[in-house]
Image 1: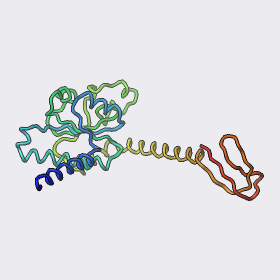
Image 2 (image 1 turned 120 degrees about the vertical axis):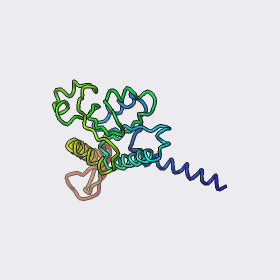
Image 3 (image 1 turned 135 degrees about the horizontal axis):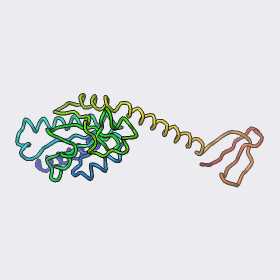
Image 4 (image 1 turned 90 degrees about the vertical axis):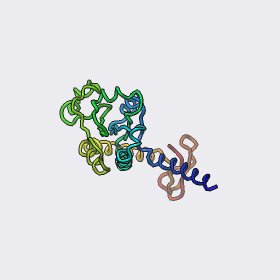
Length: 219
C-alpha cells in the first residue's frame, strides 16, 4: 500500500511540475524550433547537453538541473518573452549547433522575429533585417556558462527592454479598444419615460427625456 501511495505522489508531482514549467517549451528538432521562433516577437533559448553519460556525473548534472530551474523561474517573470530549451544531446540536432555556431554549453541565446539577436548592426537596421537569414547573424548576443535566475533576467532585459515596453504598450492599447467596444455595444439600462420600440435593437427607449424607466439590449 505504501508503494502505491509513493507512486501516486511521484505521479502527481510530475504533473504539477509540468504545469509550473508550462512557460518553458522543450523543443526536440530544428523545424519545431524555427516554427516557434517565427511565431514569437521575442524569444530566449537555452541550449544545453544532458545525456546518460552526463547524468552519471552528479556534479555536472546538478549544475544543469539548477540552471534549468533558474531558466524556468525567469520564464515566470518575463511573460512577454517566449522561453525555449533545446537539449543538443538529442539526435538530429547537430545542424542547430552548426547553424548557430554553438561551441560549449550551456548557452543562452536571444532571438527577435525568428533571428538570433545582434545588438549592433544587422537587426538594428530594419531595411536589412527583413532580408536576413538565420545564418547571416555573425555576432549574436549570448550568455554562456551556468547562470542563476537573476543573471538570466538581467541579460534578457538589457537587450529586450525597449521591445518589451513596445509590446506592453500595444497590449494596453488593444485592451482599451476592447473595453471601448464592449461599452459601446454592450447591454445598457437607464431611467426615463419610454415608448416601446420593436426594431433592432429591441427595448423601451426614453422619449423626450420624460422621467420613468426604460431598458434596451444591443451589441
